[in-house]
Image (cartoon, rainbow over all chains, first blue to last red; front, side, top):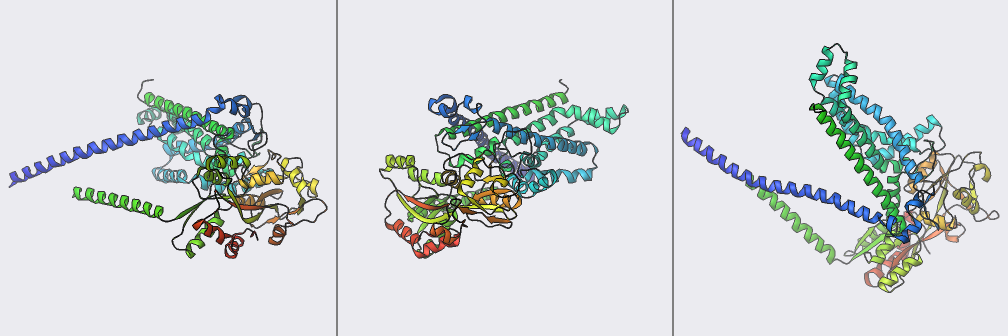
Length: 318
Length: 283
C-alpha cells in the first residue's frame, strides 16, 4: 500500500515537473519580450524626440526663427506673435526657482523623517508613518495641483502678502508634497540597510543614539540618501501638472520667488496641444523636451552610480 | 485542474477578441459622422450629437475636442468630416486644404460667442474701453489708478497660447500686439474666473462662466459710446464689441446624412440648444 502510494506520488511529481518546465519556458519568453519592448519603447521615444528637436540645430529655415543663439539672446517667451521669440532664459530660471523651493522644503523634511523612522521611532509609529508616506506618494499630481491652486495659493498670499497669488513659492511647496515620499522611501531604505553591527559597535564604544544616527548610520547611508535627493530633483524638474496649475505660468525673469513663473515642462504641456506640426514653435517645444530628457537621464544615471557606491561601501570594497 | 483554468482563461481571451472585432465592424458599418475641433465648442457639439442621435436612431456621431487648430488639421488630413472652430481658417490652412482636396472648404457659422472680461466684485472699475483693455494686456497700463480705480497693480490672467480664445483676443482686442510677459496663463475659463474671485486686482478673459465674487466688465467700443455687458441682446445686436462666430467647417457642400445634421443644427431646435449651453444663436 505504502509502496503504491510512493509510486503515484513520484509520477505526479514528474508530470508536475514537466508542466512546470513548459510553462516556465513560455513565461520566460513573455518576460523577455516585455522587457525588450520596454527598452525598445524608450529607444523609440528617444529617437522621435530628438528627431523632432533636431531642426533647431540643422534646418536653416527654422534657425532663422529659433536657434541656440536666439534662445539666449532674448528673455521674452512669445511664440505666438508676428515676431516669435523663444527666450529660454526666463523658462530655465523659472524651472530652477520652483525646483530650489521644492528641494528646500522636501530635503530636510524627508531626510529627517527617514532618520526618525529608521533610527528612533518605536515599531508602532514606524508601521504608521510608512504606509502614510506611501499614500502621499499615491496622490495624483493633478489633485495636488488643484489643491495648490485653490487652497494653498490663498493661504500663502494671506501670510506673505505677495502681489501674485500663483507663484514659484506656491508651486515649489506643492511640488515638495510630490517628492517628499520619493526621497523619504529611498533614504529610509538605505538607512535600514546599514548593518546592525556598525550601529552596535558605535553604541558599544559609548556613542549615544544621536551620535550613532548622524555620524554612523547617516554617513554610511549617505550615497543612498543622495540618490534619493537626486531622483527627487529629477522628478521635480519633470513634474508638469502641479506647476502648470500652481505657478501662474507667466514667463517673468526675476529673482523674486513670489513672482509667477513658467517652467519647461508646463510650457510643453500648455503649448504642444495646438502647435502647427513642423513649425519652428513645434521644434522648439521638442527641443525643450529633449533637454529635459537628457537632464533626467543624467540625473538618473548619477543616482544609479551613487546607489552602486553605497552597495560597494556596505560590502566593504571602498 | 490547472489545465482547466488555463483553458478557461483562453476562452475568455478568445471571446473578448471576437466581441471587440465584431464591435469594430459594427461601428464601421453604421454611417458615422466625426466632428473634431475647438474645446470651446466641445460641450455644444456633444449636446447636439446626443439629441440628434436620440431623434434619429441609426445615426452615429462622434465628437472630440483638441482645439480649433487640431480640428482644422484633421479636416486637412481627411480624418474628420466636420471641424469645429472658434476662429476662422487662416489662408495658409485653406491653401493646404486646396492642395490636398482641391476645395476651399465650406464655412458654416453655427453659433455666436461673446468673449467676456471678468473683474473682482470689489474692484471699483466696472467698465473699460477697447483701447484701455489693449493697454492693460500689452503691459502699458499697469495700475488700476490709470483707468479710474485704486492705486494697485493690475494682475493679468489669460488663456494659454494654444487656445482659440487667446488668438481671438490677441487679434481683436490687442490688434495683433503681443501679450505682456506678466500675463499669467491658466488652463480654462473656470480657473481664470476662480483666480479672479480671489484676486481683488485681477482681470481675465474667457467664455461665458459664472462664479461668486466675480463680475462682468462692461466693454465700450470707445470713450464716447456706453459700455455693454455680454448679454444675449447686446451680442445679437452687435453692441457688445467683442463677440465672435463659432464655425463648422466641411471640405465640401454637405450631402446626405451630413446635410441633414447641418440643417438640423441651424434649425430652431438646434439653435435652442446653443442658448441652453450658454452661447448665442446665429439667427
